[in-house]
Length: 92
Image (cartoon, rainbow, N blue to C red; front, side, top):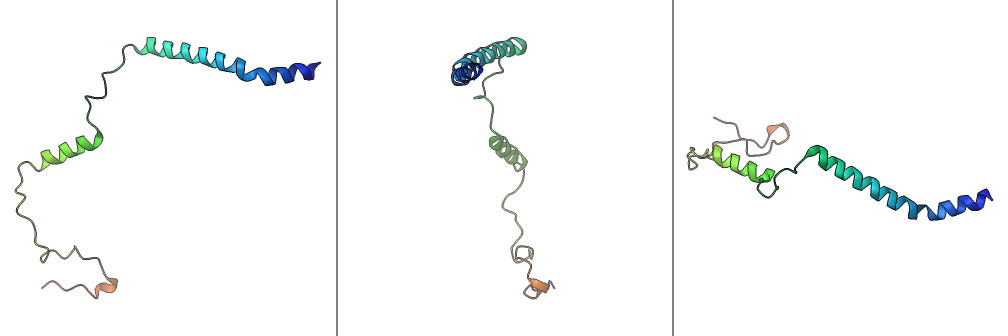
């Protein structure tokens, strides 16, 4: 008799578990809403991380003269370091 009862419980478990889980989730959601209060303002007004980064970079270069750059001939660090520096010219 016990085996028949356990087989029935096992086969009907999803039909019992889903409503119980649904009610627990609903109660938990309502409780969280009650404790936290109103939701925060919409995220549409917030800028993404990449937009914030671009804005910060633009603010950093506002007062700089972007036409004055170091020539690549004067700058030796652009070339990759060769083994034992054989291919790298010496700076005079």
